Length: 295
Image (cartoon, rainbow, N blue to C red; front, side, top):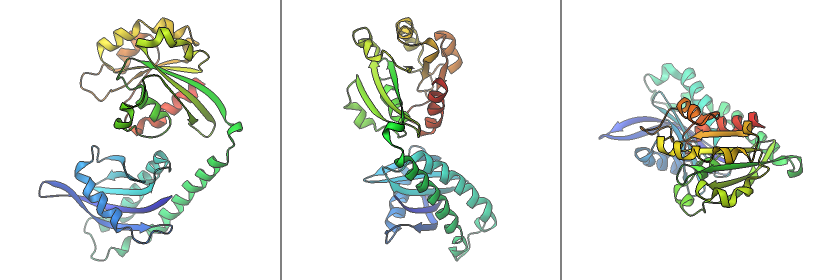
């Protein structure tokens, strides 16, 4: 359920990032969107990435995108598709800016000039809800069942990658409590339902049969030189479990200063390699594309 949308003009006040609302709308049975607006403005200084992302507060996701000092925020339920909504608001904010550029240069006293844009947003959100209904109507027996193995040493991002494949940003606190060896099952696209098994390499020899008959095996490294070297010792054993063409190295933590470049890791391992930061939801589309290509 989408509760509200609003656009914030971001500005610095007393050396602290803040903002003022220039456009807002509410949906469903929501009486007042003001608490959402106030809460997000309070969150602005603490956001790790102001450019785009989402922040979960209770049962509400604040999904946002920034363009030319404007922040478009969509307040939605936690079960709504974050990625699809982020893609939608990205296009909407750019359209808003292009449409009202002359007004944005000098804000009008009466912000009602922006009100016609409410109908444009409403139609786009209706499309999102229609797509969600179609996905819900897909019966489980109609989905293609696949098995994905994820292996790597401790703290390289195996569980973060699992979260990314299922389309949500990992919660570091929850990940701390999850076991190193675990299984997760669920729908990952409109066509596929996946069983994902993560296995740390220090337990690989004892439990590698869990990965037998996998359709894909992702080998996760943290992009540090020594970690890649240590992982190389297991590559032959991993590729005995699956067609080598169905293995893929995930060069995680590419955002760190000491990370080896993706092409260097690919040469070291001799395996096709995808660079990313698994805690960043923007890589969701790429990992799904990779899975579909491997299948």
